Structures are given as structure tokens and as C-alpha cells.
Image (cartoon, rainbow, N blue to C red; front, side):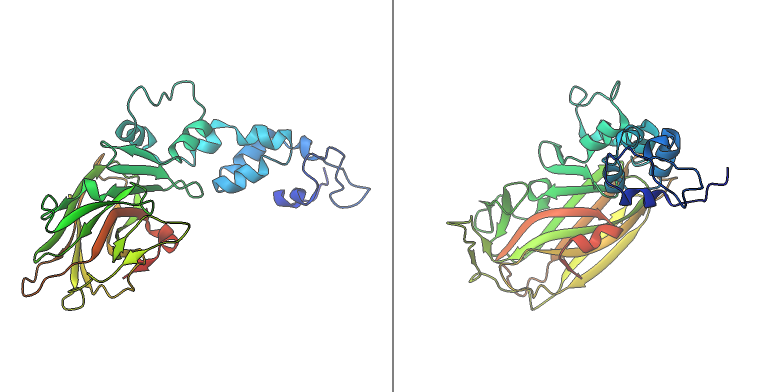
Length: 303
């Protein structure tokens, strides 16, 4: 019909909700308003955008808002196995998919959810739809954790689990963990969130951290290991030399989940320093963090 091809986003330069015709090139050519674009066309384009972009387009006018609610738009953002994720994280009475729109399901999965008796938390990243997870120190196997000569639990508002494990002093340092979860296909990084020094609750808006018990971490490196039931194994080591009072994410290793992987992926991970020629202490262990590799820049990482 002689209409020149224009980018969809060229329409967004006009005021949201504007209903008057928009001149696409010259008065002699056909004029098209935002409301004239077929919803199916808009929805197809939105399949190739990330969720924040879809939400911004939904504010343009009614046609865009209606197109953004299409189930096939949000199904393209959900993990391929989102049903398995729901079964693993939610109890049957907490999540009813029947009758729910895919947008509602996506929104609910983006809200961090505790599971496994509150020792783990999982959610989808709002911007990418990728799966993220935290495992609290209560969900880890820590050598000597029940002996108050070595370890103690400290309440703190700096943890998403409201408490951390604090190491006073020990000869054999070992923290192990294992998790089985239906991770969607992709590459993931695993980190230990730790801090040198004893963390305290904030008082009058000020943060306090005692570092006088920090010792032994500069003599030998800490060894990190990550392995999966599929045979992937990574081992790395580093010295803990960060300034006391700063939370850091120690990169333990990466693992990949392929389309042909098991329905659930079993991961084992550890953080050890077992040289018994000296003691080590003054360390807070908060959690283990599992993020998609592309989200790694969101964390303060120590390699």
C-alpha cells in the first residue's frame, strides 16, 4: 500500500495514550495510529524483548497493554521446565497454575520463595527470567557447628536468612553442601558469601564489625570444589585477604545444565582449609549463591 517500513519503537517517541494519527512519512502517504497495529503483531514482537521492555511497552496504550498480556509472550520468558520448578519450590496448596495467566505465573516465580524448611530460597531474575538460588548456612554441613567452642549463630539483618554462622577458631575448617534442583538449561556460577570479622546488628544507623579474631587465612589458601552428578568437576583455591567487615562472594566454580540433562541436577560443593598446622578463625559464613553466569556482575566477586 505504499507504506514505508518503520521500526516499532519509532512509535514510542509519541506521548503514551495518544490516539490521533501519526504521520509515518508525509501527508500524501497513509497515516497510522498506534491503535491500528494488530495485537497479534505487537505480541509477536514482544516475544523477542526482555520482560522490562515488555512492561514499558504495555504503558503506551490499550493495544500494547492487551498484547503484553498474551500467554505466549510470557511463556517465552518462563523456563522450559517451569512446572518442575513450581513442584520443587511450592507446596501444592500454595501455587495453582490452572486458571492463572502466564504473566501471573512469571510474576510469582520472580518473588523469592523459601523452601526446604526455610534453608533455601529460589526465584527468577525479573530482567532475564533466569533461575537464581540461595542456600543458607543452616542448610550446609559445617564441621564442628554444634560445638560452641568453634562456631556460633549470630542474628543479623545483613543476611536474607536473618542469621549467619560465625567461626571463632578451629583447626579443621570444612563447609559442605548438596542440592538437587530442576535448574533450566544454561550455565551457572556458584559462590560462597562470606565476611572476615564478626557481624553485628546495626545500631542507630551505624554498622559494626569486630575483626580481632580474624587469623590464619593468609597462611594457606581455601580450596573450593563444585561437582555435578553428570561428571562436571571444578576445583580452585584462593587466599582470604579481603578487608574485614566486607561481604564478598568467593567464586567456587561453574556448572552447565543441558537440554538432555536429568530432570533434576544434583550439585555438591565445598569450601575447606584443612591444614592443621595452624588455627583459623574470625569468619562469617552467610550462604551459598547460585546465579546464571551472565548475572555474575551483579555480585561483589572474589576469584
